[in-house]
Length: 474
Image (cartoon, rainbow, N blue to C red; front, side, top):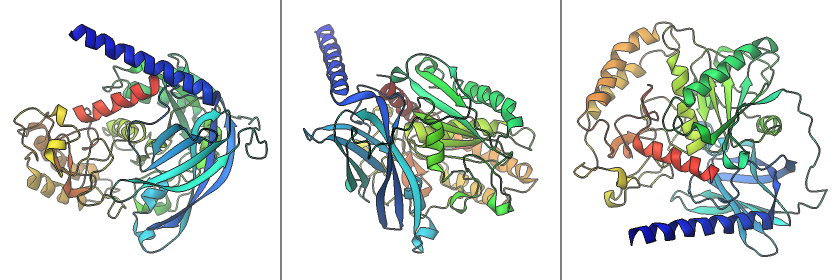
């Protein structure tokens, strides 16, 4: 009987795969449509306006997972076939705009505009594209809609773009549609720095595939590079009044946070990235200040130098941590470090991130299948002692030359709490996550998404990464 059930499930999965494959061939051709928008607003207000539509290279994504089953991201793009009204594609994502809306600047009523893109398989016939956003209760509501005729030359830019930078396939494991295609691009690397970029690519690729579960799934990835040259070495540090002619426009002090690195040059990045098939973009920063960033289904950034001997491992931590955000939609589990957000999460509302919970009902905990019997929910830990150590650390000047020397004893004591606690290594619900000391819970005492260390991903985060890999390769 058990064998019959397993056979039936496998047969059903095979039939579903065939059905979805037929849907792809019915509605799409093997190319990518990129739709660019302008996103304008302030806290509580937003307007989306269409910019341009592009015909790009081959579609690198799945031909079977056309409708997103993961329910991740602050926004959702949906594509409908106009003739039949059928939904034919959807995908969740997050934006720089939605992060900025939670800052004090937006709260003061300042308006800003950000450039954004969504990408999906190139349709054969007229489509309706909608963008939806979650409300405070996590329910999606449509905020924008437009109709695009792929056969109208006045609507779609089909220019064959000249790509001035050298591109290469660093790791080749197969066709893009059956792999996760990771694109690595440099910013702040002048022509003389390209040898360093190649070394950095090898280093961080080794770091990623030396970390579980990426290590076990290495064969499911392709890695691409594009050698983008900047006019100067390094990236902008506004707080130091240091400005560089870096090609991708990355800068420290994003949203006023010293170590947060993003870029507002979306169009430039997308134009450059279109030279190769890609699912995920990582930007290596040729600079020496600790820093990075990552947004779900957008890109990551990571610094590649340090002037502090013995702290090189922090670059490795940042690279993998930020990929957890951009690739798997994982949330930050820490809550004591400085961020520029105000009320990023709503009290008592379940976040969409797979590794954060408001724990309103322990019986429906999103990772309950990984919790051992007898583990209390919420799960007790030495939070008060940990918080006191973090308050002492927060008083230190992070940019001072002796910061790490002064931080070391506090860091060691905090790590002891995380490594030696009664429920260390177990899955539960530990209070303190998502920039909130109370009201949000994380799955484990420690994880790559929680502490600044080379600790492994917890079981919940590993499972989320595995799900995303399967989503891309099936």
